[in-house]
Length: 165
Image 1 (cartoon, rainbow, N blue to C red):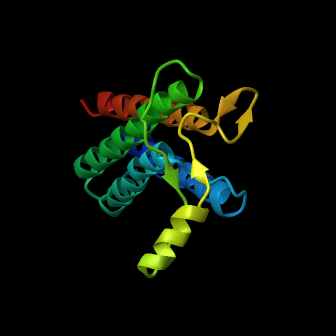
Image 2 (tube, rainbow, N blue to C red):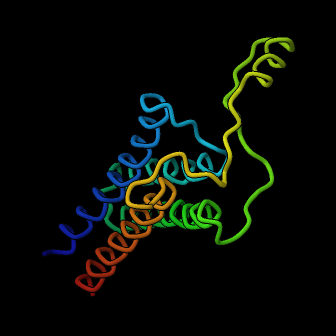
C-alpha cells in the first residue's frame, strides 16, 4: 500500500471510530435510556475533539504532512478517551476508587424548576455500570475500541511514514 493510501485509511479510521463510539453513546442515552454519569461525559469530549481533528485531516488531504499531523492528533484524542474509559471501568469493577460526585439528568428554566429537577432527577452513579455485555461495561467497551483504534491509526501512520523516507 502506498503512503498516500495508508494515510487515507488512517484518516478514515480516525473519523469513523469517534463518530461510531459517540453515536453509540448518544443512542444508548436517548434511545436506550441509559443516562451518563460524569465520567461517561468525560469520555465523550475527546471523541468530539477527535472528530474535529479528523475532519481537519480530510480538509487538508492535499497537504499530506498537515493531514498526517491532524490524523495523529485525532488518534491521541481517541486514546485519551480510551484511558478515561479504563479508569471509569476500573471504578465500576471496584478495582480502585473513583470520584465522590455523581451526575444527575437535569434541565431547568427557573430556580424552582431547577430545585424540582434536582429533587426528581435520577442519581447516576459512576461506580455502577448501567449495562454490561459478557461482563464488559460501556466504559470498558469504550476503552477497548478507543485504545485499539488509536493503536491501529498509529500503526498505519508509522507504516505510511516509513514509506516516505
